[in-house]
Length: 82
Image (cartoon, rainbow, N blue to C red; front, side, top):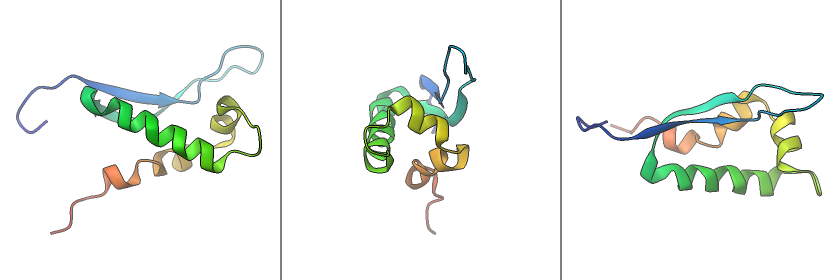
């Protein structure tokens, strides 16, 4: 990034184990390590504002589409205006 190597993480959401197991989904690639907490905060804020009553995070992630989850980071991924 910017000509300098930085440690980054790919953000996956929605995986679950057990009887109705499912794989997680890549939602945001290459999150710089110093910004990971900001992305987690965005997910938790979206969950709090969009959950149904006492719905768990796991259930909310399970009913959210990949596009819905990616939209959480739309402001981060927007192309800069010229």
